[in-house]
Length: 267
Image 1 (tube, rainbow, N blue to C red):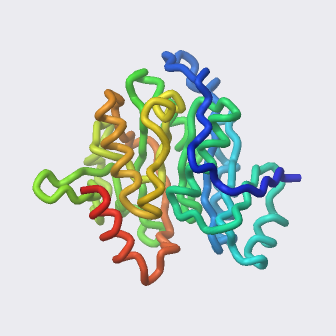
Image 2: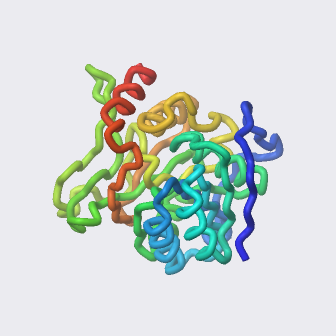
């Protein structure tokens, strides 16, 4: 049976002081918490979990932050989850707040890395191994992303990393809508990584802090990337990690407002 915890977020995160930076010598041995945020999207979340079951990386734990979905949607999710941790919330905390619930759980349980993943994504079996391998290549790396493709157009890139326009300070997606012709090979430094597929080192979180929940949704990952780099952590992507995103935004008609809201907060 899955473990279920009902909780409200803390106003200040409880981050263990015992966490420390380390040099990775055995990538497969690093414990990874995989954090999914679900809000009225049980079917896609379950499909994501099914794809995670095919990962060739063993030492991981799926954590589903249940962001106050309808009773029907929650019931579907609850009935189908066997080994996943479910952290049920009493209100919708947004993407940033929901992710932070999962991150806090991971830190309190002393996981080495946290993998934020959109719940409407499907991953390649070697995706997590590739992310962990990239992280292990340099102890200065705090965040690793991969290449996210459109589910409806599997060879077309949605993001291969994020950049910040130096004139407007707007965040943008590298490779957006390009066909993949191996133009983003290897490990590359970027300004930020999309929260839709982001592996972060726990030691970096303890120094930089959690996602800023004022953003609610959009630009929280941009802000995190900037804060990481300001404190000396590298933010990179690896072309070896791949996922396919169905892009079923939970923001709905509020998406343009939330993007602008996030942008003005980020400035």
